[in-house]
Image (tube, rainbow, N blue to C red; front, side, top):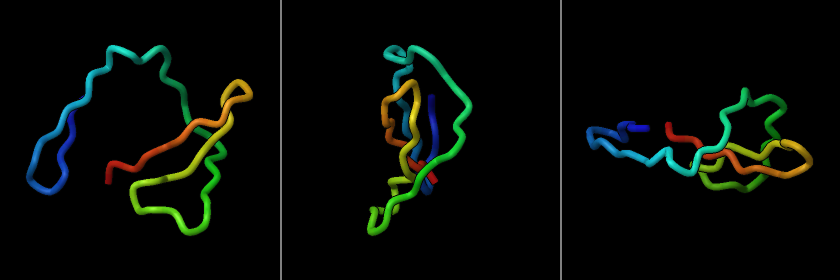
Length: 53
């Protein structure tokens, strides 16, 4: 996966990716950093969502 932040290109390996799912019911938390989008429950585990915007 590659993406741009301002005018710089970054890339992440997708090798450790096991599954891609549609995200629903994202819970936001107060006093979070801008890059932290929230968390969601997937198969009874809390997963962190980061914002690349």
